[in-house]
Amino acid sequence: MCYAIPGKVIQIADNIISVDYFGETRRAKNEFLEISVGDYIYAQGGFVVQKIPASEALLSLETWQELFFKLKEIDQELAKQNKGLYQRANFLRQKHLGNACCIHGIIEFSNHCRNDCLYCGIRKSNSKISRYRMDVDEILEACRFAVKELNFKALVLQSGEDLWYTKEKLASIVSRIMKEFPALVILSIGERDLETYKELYQKGARAILMRFETGNPALYERYRPGKILSERLDLIRSLHDIGYLIFTGFLIGLPQQTEQDILNDIKLAGALNSEMFSFGPFIPHPDTPLRDVPKPSLDLALSAIARARIKFPQSRILVTTALETLDNENGARLGLLSGGNSLMINVTPLEYKRCYEIYPDRVGLNEDITRKIESTIKLLQSIGRAPTDLGLYIRGQ
Image (cartoon, rainbow, N blue to C red):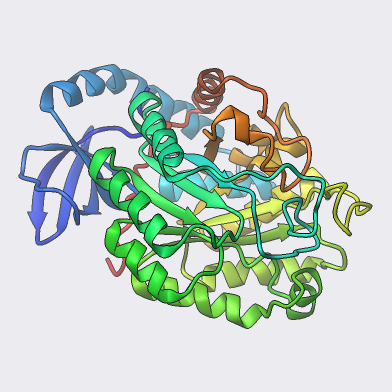
């Protein structure tokens, strides 16, 4: 199954196209393809990423049509209650964004990192971890497989802050993805100079996943030695100014973090023009200075999602793998029913997946990727969500 529903182009105004999905109209930017009225396209994050033959689109739409409206009914029924915090958040999610749930593939291509963050298992001081770097061809093959074989339309390219990947290497990777198997390219590569990010935008990358981790300056400098919060925030703002969609958020459950810190961090994520919120519970790694810190409760993580949804009802909110790890059986479902509407599936090649150990015992490390996709789709359908990105976003519209 594709992780986007094909839409028919019904209007074009400069580089903004209007797309019909079963009688609903969305808009998207077209910056990469030659598009005419009547063409069928896939869009992700408000950008057209692929044009597809009409025969292929119509076959997919025929499969989708009955299911699309059935899922909507299930979602609407589940969202009727709005009395408690989580129910209220789910009600607002359905009211403002419908039942779309975007699914991104994530490829973790290097666990080398120049930073020494106290909370992270791939910090440079951790000598126990098995380090790896995927070369350019390996990364491209992983991307090709995710797009062509697994049908992902959005990919997160994530690594530690590894300067072995120069501007030229990264630019080559992004450029070849967009030419050979286009997708929404989301970069999660840490702090780089603006010239590098401008070059990667020019090559076709359109989103950045960069958490600020904590908006409390004292905690930030304590847990990220040698780093200053204001510099991180300035970079995120500059990336937004370049044109990137911003995916940002923070860790939940850091030592000395207060409830007010969490509320302030939700506000900060919104103030940073976040297109997608990413709130991950802090899970301590045994080979870090914070090894003895207890995990946060599932309720604390769910309440952050719910409060963000209530404050920013039209935002996308990611249900993180860390949340799923807190509760392997129900974490993803509960996150989605507390206001979440986005998931990531790890499509890193198996020989590297276990080595990207930012925290221990991540959910799904040994699960076959096709089974993971099947179980994710089954979960979404059980709560009435369509595994696609219909929440098309146009900045300034």
